[in-house]
Image 1 (tube, helix red, strand yellow):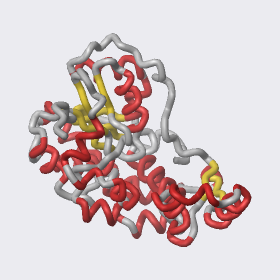
Image 2 (image 1 turned 30 degrees about the horizontal axis):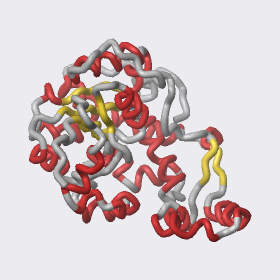
Image 3 (image 1 turned 90 degrees about the vertical axis):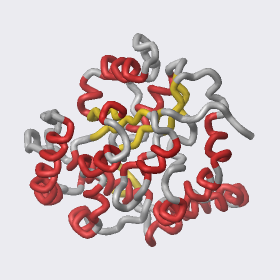
Image 4 (image 1 turned 180 degrees about the vertical axis):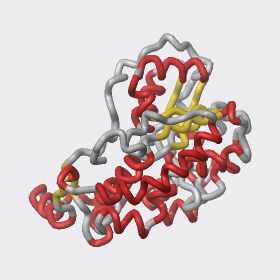
Length: 303
């Protein structure tokens, strides 16, 4: 089946920087349609997606353009049609995304929302503790796995897109700037998108996908946790009594209190390299980022 409507807006990241909330705000606008699931990751090469995020790969949106287009079949007369896959700014782990989007829609608009790179990196670590079976201590994990740091290299990520898109096609903002005046900033984004800017989303003060202070740390490389979120488990979990499922969760996901973990060494390790990266970002965009308090040691904050 052929659908005339295709996405022309892509929120490309960054992970753990407010993309889920922004996706919801945009979707409230009467002239904007944002798809569900939020992160179909269609433009990630399928073999890379399978290795990186098997649960999304199993959903199979990558299999054909028709499967992908079906996500937007209810867009109707929406002027802006979009999705928000943070996998689109995870170079060099995931490559070729910008080129693939360019080939699909050369006139596409992109939104890249960033966050204090130190806070984002640590939040990424806690995400992996919760969902991906990360068991190493924060400093060890972030030193060993360069991917944590690379996703916070915003200039590096943007450069992949500037090879194919004009800078005018990319709207950049930080979550700190956005939250300082949410109403004003969402209206500026509406204006940039060419839709009625006076619209105010009802859920404007609601934050989505905020990692709680008390989380559960998956064990065994997250195998049990991944199984519990797989299509297979969805089809059979109703056969198991509630008490058995609760017991299995206690075994596979013991609780961790984030605020009890000292990340001071992580901050000191990341600060010099992230300041250097941010200088490159400032040169690229022609703006500074004084709102990044942890990066510039303006507050003592645990991320």
